[in-house]
Image (cartoon, rainbow, N blue to C red; front, side):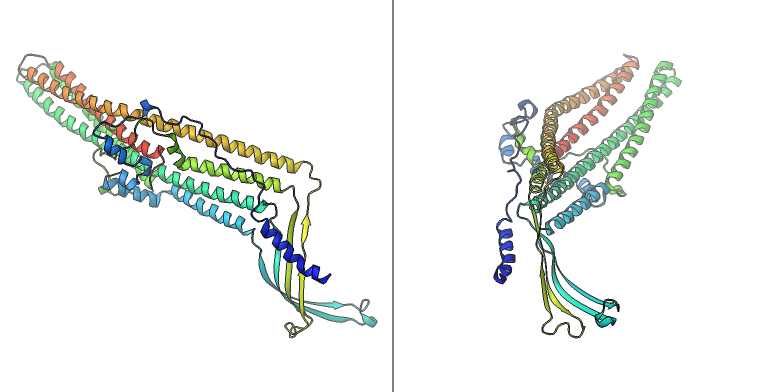
Length: 476
């Protein structure tokens, strides 16, 4: 009998170790991609013959670190400031630390908790209960090393909960990576928007100066009786239009600067602000038929998959709740009525208290909890598939715009050149007395509008490249 008692803890521990790797969670299988195998060919331009060798060897945008994607040193410095000071990114990082701590808490439940406890007790036995009707005072002192209630995870309940906590932590880490990628893209887009505003402002100031000079010439010609009042008023209208444009772009630049500083989370030094549009890296290797599997590296999709894995593991915990729970409580130490004799021979004591709790009647709550966990998994599957579909649409849109924006920029640049020549010829005909000032006025208006449109197209082209960087998952 004593031998059986001594071997019981060993048997239970061996059983716990033997079943420690078992869980009742269903085997995880990644859902198939709910989109086409490749992006539409018309949405992703094939490289030219000159670009083909370079495109084949170059990495996709998702593999390019942002330090290499954004080539302007000032922009890189601004992004560094944002990564260090942006409050949203700071919250995302703290959420990762919180999730990591919660995972460690959940993981610790798999291991026993051992502690030391020392107690001392003195109590009086009244006369009515004492020997021979005499009251007495008794003392008990105990020092022990104890094993707190430790659940033997025979059916994988704790391991399923640990897996769920791990997946939630990993999902939070991917959310932080996604927040960082979004922040980098937002800072770059806002910085480029400020650059476009500054370039339009400089263009408007230059136009105002040119129009002011033309107005002064016509005014002097009017005083000499050569130009008409109509010519003078038409020139004046151009001056006022240019002045209004200067005011508008001054305000736009101030708003863009405020938006940039909000993203950065700090004051942006003047030497890091742009004065004109600059080019960012054009990601090579984005040829026709780009496989849609590249989406699986996006942080938001990885986060959704980790949530799906966590929901899958939670089913195992819900299933394990139907089975008995076995927990152990044990202790070893010394006990003595005298403090001085606490560690003397003959004071050794030990306790061993296994406990088995098995559900018999729970009014259907266990079945309902299992149903909830299965529905949660289906919700996670739908969320994962929707994230992939949304990502596929974003990449398709960005790739489709990439080709059209290049063609639009080339056409707009050609239009500016043509209108510059039109203005030169119209001005020459006016000064030669062949035409009135009205053709010059139209040519000036058309050229100014085309120049502003050219800035807008170049900004849209650069912003599209930033969007491609973001929707393809960003860099390191």
